[in-house]
Amino acid sequence: MGITKESFVEHLQQDLAAEWAAVHRYVLQAARCTGPEGEVVRQLFLKEAREELEHAQFLAELIIDLGSQPTGECASFEVGQDLTQMLQINLDQELQDTQRYLQRAEEAEDLGMEDLEIHFEQMAADEADHARTLRRLLGKTRQLN
Ligand SMILES: [Fe+2]
Ligand SMILES: [Fe+2]
Image (cartoon, rainbow, N blue to C red; front, side, top):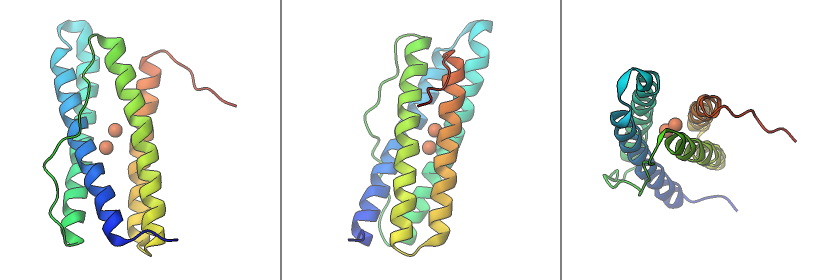
């Protein structure tokens, strides 16, 4: 059975709350990256914060287009105590966000909104790129089956 427009919009509201959380998380983490040794990661976190903000802007406009009011609520989030924890929290979150947008692409397809399907696939690719960068910073390799 296909998804209803109402459930789709509810999922978009959850996506938006998660994007607000991601913007907050990356900005707060960037602020904690001090000194010359923290500068590279600081710049990376700020770049990701800007990309999450673009996702939030897209979702807010889409929710308006679909006839609802976008949420200003932010999902709960962790910042982490040290660099490794911050990177791990972000990696876990980016992998979840990748799945979130792949699911949203399928829902858009169910609703016959092909343009949105493609856009959500691109957002999933953005989040997967974030995950890949974080995985490399953690010095991890990709686990293949
Ligand atoms: Fe995002
Ligand atoms: Fe991301």
